[in-house]
Amino acid sequence: MTAAAPASGVARVRRHRARRGATLVELLVGTALGLVVLAAELSVLVRLQRADGWLRRRAAARAQLAHAASVLGAELRAAQGDSTASDPADLLLLADSAVELRATIGSSVACAVAGGGTVVEVVDGASAAAAGAAGWTAAPREGDWLLVHDEGARPSAGDDAWRSAEVRGATSSASACRSGPAAPLADAGGHWRVTLSTPLPATIAAGAPVRALRRRRYALYRAGDGLWYLGQREWELGASTMQPVAGPLLPHRAGGGGGMHVVAVDADGAALVGAPAGRTVVRTVVTLRAGGTVRGVSWRDSAVVHVAARVEGR
Image (cartoon, rainbow, N blue to C red; front, side, top):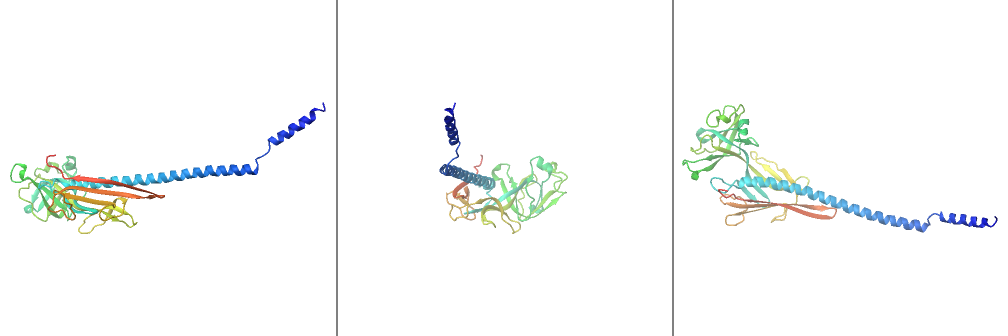
């Protein structure tokens, strides 16, 4: 019985040694390993945040570029025409980073021509809009242009043309368009009585298609926040204010490489700079660029608007 006591004491010592805590060296090694793992995780998190910011900035810039390209493309396609007398181009200015054009603000039908061709009554209202004969984004006013289709003296289409005159004044009239071919389109609303600067030819009669145009400029400009944007300006009796359309874009750079660059060529392949009056614009290319730096990572993106003159019969 007495021989078992020493063995029991040895077992208690062994169990005590098995339950001992970590040494200081082991704690230091464990802490160092934990810090290494934490540093690696933080590094991955920083890279993910940087990539997320980069992707967000680029996605936002692409959306702005797409919007700018959509707006400019629609305006240029409408203004390009087919460069013939029957469908003249409405491009007024082509600069390095600006485009000026006559933009359509309304289309309708002339229900009467009076005053020796200087007064045109134009259909407006819900009935005309429902029939697809009229649509306006803005009311006509002084300084706009009115284009009226002239079928000419011959029954063939060979002498058809759009006649242009500057608007001297426009008033809404409830008495206009109550008779003539356009009378079925008239409703209780008012219609436009437009006074022109020059008389229209006598061959223009009631029922002729009408387009109302307004001078509009798109240009790269620097806003009050110091950033560059694609802006739009409308002429309102000589006064105008640039309004942002899309951006921010890259700063202006003469000769290309900036936020907006315009290239236009005529039928001979010569580059057009300034007013293209009297010269046929066969192609206009506008390049828009955006870019920046996010957490040390630089990026660039672009959109290209390519508009060619329409070919008759297509």
